[in-house]
Image (tube, rainbow, N blue to C red; front, side):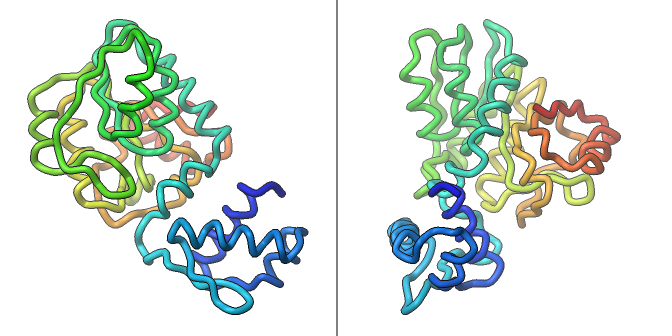
Length: 252
């Protein structure tokens, strides 16, 4: 188990139980207590937990998404495959709206050298796109969310209302036929809805873990999505249900 897997396990335990011990984690991961302590110290520096004698307690609020730096490390191979598949859906010359999030950041890396016009909804995505030499970059206005560096608020919505896109590539925090597409931040919900209104086609890029999650903010019913690109770990029942709702599902 490498460091990314260990810290993912620690975060998962914290979300489930609220606290962890060094001894338990050392036994579970097969690594030394010294290694586990270094992992805990690293996560404490990111605001995920507070160190206590013999272990740590969670600082992750219930019902809120983990910090961006934690999510960026999760399912990296799946996100790269998803990004490649999304890139194949985008034709040269298209106008593309690119959502915030760790999966769409990978999509930005796929699109940075393409002959397209892109409006990103986060500063991280904008930075990746600006490093390319061929994509035309349009910037939305709006308030920048601390930590996420995504764009939200009336100015961002006004920017989306003023433009029409061939494709909107969105991320999400949760996805199911019963609960629809969901997100944790209500400001992000409003931006996703505005993005969908401004695009002829909506592509949702979401790794398989999102199919087991439900966040507080309701974005739309699943049937409002045109294409879902996810990974091969997505449960067959969930994929079948989403397909039955009229969504084209690609598992890569």
